[in-house]
Figure 1 (cartoon, helix red, strand yellow):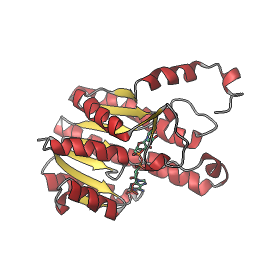
Figure 2 (cartoon, helix red, strand yellow; figure 1 turned 90 degrees about the horizontal axis):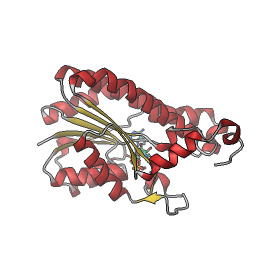
Figure 3 (tube, protein in one colour; figure 1 turned 45 degrees about the vertical axis):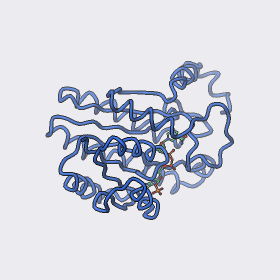
Length: 242
Ligand SMILES: NC(=O)c1ccc[n+]([C@@H]2O[C@H](COP(=O)([O-])OP(=O)(O)OC[C@H]3O[C@@H](n4cnc5c(N)ncnc54)[C@H](OP(=O)(O)O)[C@@H]3O)[C@@H](O)[C@H]2O)c1
């Protein structure tokens, strides 16, 4: 039985992962901000109250305590999935500095805080897996979502260095880069053929973590799409609108 901490357990993608892990009888500790949703998930998955915790994860000073609570409740820890994040309108972030910095705080600084705490724990333990949902948006800044994109790029770069640091301890550092997924975060977006169902993405994330695959685009066609976007010459790229 694996002991798994989910930070951002109310995420539609994380919920799918939690469903699968619960069916496999893994031990879960769920941390979410919206208490009603968290309690509903706990009831659905038959998770006892001592294994759930309501917390606003933008409060970085509480991270150490949250992490330790999860470890003591489960009496250990095998891996962590970080699945929380926000996506404010790019246009609003261009004029509202406070909003832009708030998003960077939750998507980047707060995630880096948790990653630092768990890296030190797993390093001492000499085992563990760290999985973070970043985004294809981090691969190249585009005018339509560069605030969100840079917040995710910061994490992908951090994970790349962390992976090298923890390699000798056999600790897997997993960067999961979804494309477009139909969840609460994207409910107001117009959908097309590029969009994926969170059920499918959740199932794939569980498989990726099982295999310890270090960087994955989800679905895999996003690897090719982003490759093409990354090789567009700057002279052309800066004139494009997307
Ligand atoms: N949907 C996509 O197209 C897509 C694509 C690429 C990457 N991603 C990433 O995938 C991850 C999961 O997102 P999702 O698509 O499943 O969307 P989602 O259902 O909206 O989940 C995002 C979760 O983040 C949590 N959150 C936001 N601010 C928080 C805070 N201050 N403290 C604690 N929790 C906070 C929210 O928790 P509460 O519900 O408790 O408020 C929410 O449940 C995110 O990192 C997102 O950036 C999503």
